[in-house]
Image (cartoon, rainbow, N blue to C red; front, top):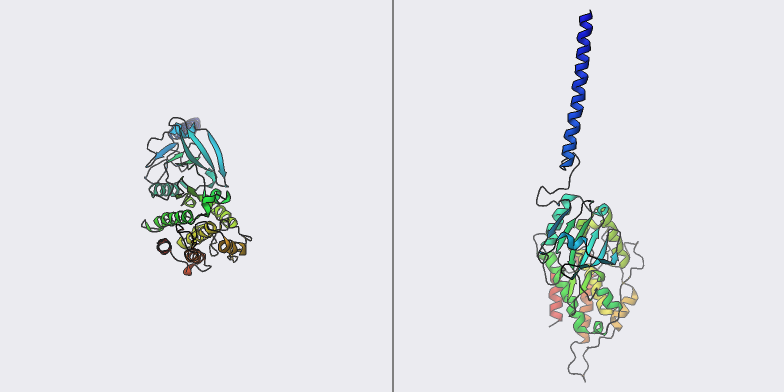
Length: 351
């Protein structure tokens, strides 16, 4: 009997010792894996071409000389804010070069795999009328920074608001319009699958000193989660650019981009920004009366006059431009021209 109790005691102690040893081994294994970044939580480390590493800098055409310290040490001035991010005018000290930095809030971005695929797509897009992506930085706390060129002459919205005399010239209106159309045409037709802008507006068109336009923010919605994407769409609606049929950002299409382009063409011709008076009403697609009147009454300084030989445009030409813009803003997507048709008609108007 005593021997039986002794065996039980030994077995009990042995089991306890094995159990404790097992716990210790498991603890050290997890500690080692955590140190190497291989814990059981899904890691955003790069394992495939379409994923983004923690604390990594990717550089693209035009930004090959970027290094992480350029981004992290750059003094910046806030020039724009939204629910999903902040825009900075940043001075890169090493090169004494001003760049545009876009910070995306981690809580607003999409999952790592989708984000990586979108970055690789956007970084490959190059066109004379599109703002290129020069670099991308992903920080250890999930922060994400996109690097773009900075355009000192500001946005098309500023150009129109300032009432610059150049904004009344047909030659400038036409140059900006056809440049925007060419950039959007490249997005819609230059790839195997169309790249949808999703947020085309005056603020997202930048100008150089020669009034050449550069479309920015194209495809930015691809980097955002559904909630942030919907907030972007609501802001677009408040500014008057949302097509009436568009309910969710994931349904944005070539037709909804063309609608936004039509609004921009009217704003260029009228010299006024369009504001949607009732953005919560999806059926409120009619342009305000003041916009129509402004287009028809606006004084284009280089219209044809019989006594001025160097004039460049007739009222008939301006009317054709107006009619094209209105066709782009048709409430029915099927009645809107596609971007290639818009470009052809603009080229005909300019002849």
